[in-house]
Image 1 (spheres, rainbow, N blue to C red):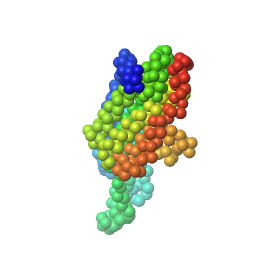
Image 2 (image 1 turned 90 degrees about the horizontal axis):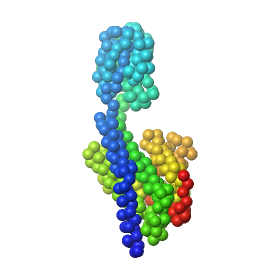
Image 3 (image 1 turned 45 degrees about the horizontal axis):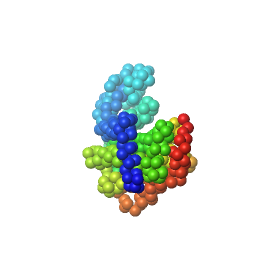
Image 4 (image 1 turned 90 degrees about the vertical axis):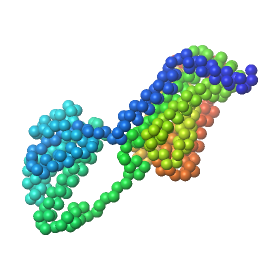
Length: 389
């Protein structure tokens, strides 16, 4: 049997094995597609809208009513009920009927008008991080604006004009610019990392499963002999159909993000496509490395799953790596997703020269050749039918 024939013989065998097990189609096609649709539609509006909130207005004056009307006009905040006292609002917050409430005590307008300092309280349920944070931002902004409005009226009463009053209330005017995501769109923030993270998790699990089922089912020797005893050819041919299908999934999510949803991509489509393809190959390389080192389906699959799940928080998209303990900073560079994220920041968001991302591509290539370290152990296990449950 020629070398070329051996490779394609293993490929055909793997296609038949994949076709006979619906688990492959579920893991490679349906699970990623479901997650792509779920995550991109979850934040389809960019930010959560009309978050339920409550108010307690014990002052009940024109100033307090104006504050509440302005607060309700915010896009993220919807005042669903006005409570008569603090206890009712607190109980509603504990029952998860609202994410937070705005408390205006009695005498607020009187104290503000006499230049004494009234207190307006904000209560949010921090168990729900994003809704409470958005509500807190709106409520705090409203409280600051209300304070400035009262102070402006006092200055007007003392004879100050508009410019003088605003110069006193806001001596330094802020001009803020949110780089790369000026819309503060959570979909851009979330989907650009969650979609490839889901794909990485599936690649790790499927790669490990497909190799270890050969050992578990007792077909590893046939698989190896079909590749003329060459373990590198056997593994690469086995993973070839999976690589093609995962590459199609990567192409789908890239087209969805940068073509359909038009997320920021300043350096064009090709750098991210190459990065996604290298991420798949790097994940497969890491999975083969684990499968060779641990000849047990249960243990190696558990480790690959754990590594895929840990990729999400440790890659740096939700919490910066530089703020982590030094041990975790060092550990973060053992995850292929970390390098993909750095490429995404450089190429899609910042649009800098490809030269500055070259080392990240090289790192992904390092994961691709990682199986060379211990693949001889897999060949030994395949020849001797050694399998640990």
